Length: 533
Image (cartoon, rainbow, N blue to C red):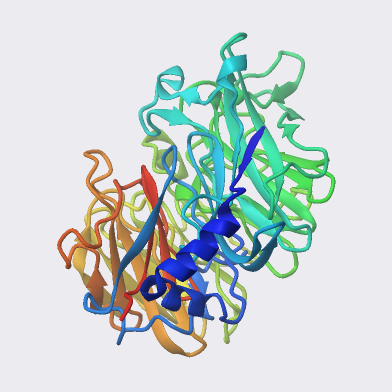
């Protein structure tokens, strides 16, 4: 691994502060706020997408006259991973900074000053070494055009403040041998250096007779066919890493692997279809979720199902050591498998405790557009003749789903392909049959995965990216809404070219922290906030 540290960052900070007071004054103020951290995808292990400590941004000031694009940082590859944020981090020789971390498909991790006080990265870690034949994986190698032109880091990392580490999975190809491989890294937050003896190469084997078996009763993890799309999860003292496939090619399965967060020793392995095939876990970029008791919830894509060892098209609950404890499988599972209608397309968004008979619930949807409110225990299992009546609530949205829902303010927010952003109210653990609010704007493919922010119970907002122009290189467009009505207050196309973001990336999620919104694109990290007076 190569780490480049911005040795002149502290000098640059002084120069910027003295030479550009009109820019620096509002940015300096942001650095004095109470600590706010975004350490994992969608803000928490429930995957709600809510930052409840946003004290600056509100409907009254997120307008094109007062809010816009402040600055950008160039990056070396597409940013599929959600930006993460740490407040008040001490950097050796560089003072204290709010830091935003991004990971690219060119196998780089960057640490940037989150307030624009340093013009270049604080540090950059690279996991390729072309001189030695270690590169990213060309998209042509996997015969799949969903990630182009290269595959490196796709899943959102996760941060442990206790360990002062950022955990991230990289994929590389050895051009000399033709071998593909994934590695789990633990990077020091302040320096980017490897910790805990890392990286470790990801390998796994389980008992099974499914596709890719060795003929002796074992199925092994095959890096060539795997895609590490879901965000990483930190829970139970372990880092959980999940895998799907590239365009359903090759003999593949869904995998979850658990590693000790302090030693990187592998602790547990789960295969979604060990006696069958497929069952990838990708969840539109959402990570496995975790309850307060440490149980793990994931959604599994199309594949073999028997309710014993194979769980294609299901939502499942696992214990911390990845043993299946319960599941829900739609009654149309066989048809879903046949037509690639991924049962776990959204992943599982866990709700805060609800009043009523089922206090522990989750939201999740399938690719065809059906959206469920499920009990977390018991989940309902499989009943072919029940038409999913085990679910607490069902909404047929009328639009394909390739998005991650958010849950905040008693509302479940969901995008959809060619759909408005809509909000369904959950009251006493029951979901309204019709949306309580919807946006005016219609989001094209792949829809939108929203985020939410508030100052406690006040100033509730929802944020969404329109990334439908990803294929043509058109910019991502940031939208903001009042959370209860979904009335738009701002979008980044309103002020001409002033607020134009970089080229869009599919499935990206905005990060809201300390008065700023961070948007990953194909070429840059764009940062939005209140404009200087």
